Image (cartoon, rainbow, N blue to C red; front, side, top):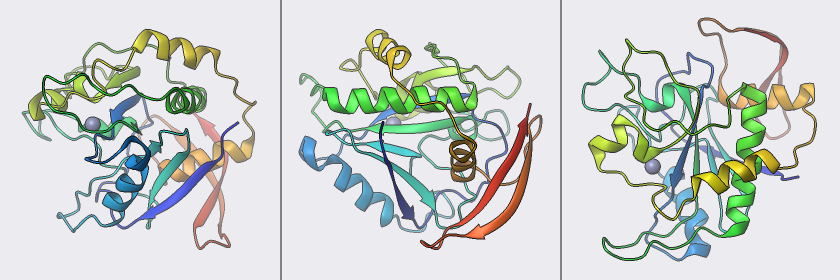
Length: 243
Ligand SMILES: [Zn+2]
């Protein structure tokens, strides 16, 4: 059982989520600092993102080297994270990765080309596997590796897990995360074996309010009354979800 820490960030994107998540995208933090300081540097970076016309650098989740899970939320709580955008064609022909994905950043320091990539810690992999399994259960995302996503609007959206490097966006930007140190077969096995507690209505409400408010095509979410929590977040209770 993992607790998930919430961190407010000033800016996700200016685009509300419109679709139910179909994909879990795995990223590596690659900050220029030690393994132990990866989470701190990411939290600082996301918290101090300058205004980029509505495109902030963020992710939905961060897993530290010692297995602490952090969830980032826009202060307005209804915009999607921006961990990966378009490929080479842009919005007219492609989906941004994050339109359909939940993003997880896992701690791994930056390394130079030609160097051996630093290993992910087992604590981070175990926590990421638990989180992935949890998200997979909540959002009905199969624990399967998608080889590559073209992001094309005229093609069906795949359902499953993929790396940032396995997207048109990653290809365009030369991204290589999570890279060769990430063993997909063993990670998928860890996800299948992860012990997850049965989902409660409160879990579902938390998951949905954190990811998106409002409605989107094909999914009907019925919300109860909004309430303001002690920590200032507005939370709406999820009553039912129908697909
Ligand atoms: Zn990435």
